[in-house]
Image (tube, rainbow, N blue to C red):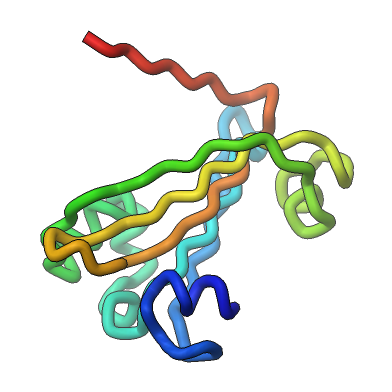
Length: 129
């Protein structure tokens, strides 16, 4: 994917490691997440790591990256065929989509992530103190 490679600062069509995960609640799909990482960051990550840690914890503890800025871009999108099938919703139903851009302390990109949530199963709360 050219947009992914561009974000990661790599030539177009460079190999990347992709992790795909579905999270469920009450036996029903809640979200579908796709993480894209450069090979040198993704290679050391194993399924067992993601079964007991979040991806960010895995990047810090397994890959030993000093994480810096993490940006979230939130929008309502429409479910494409793949997303609708995985989340057990109809094509073009609204989904809450969060694009997460992760950088290290040196402001270099580490990963880019898209998470798609079933719109009526997710609550978001922000408290500014």
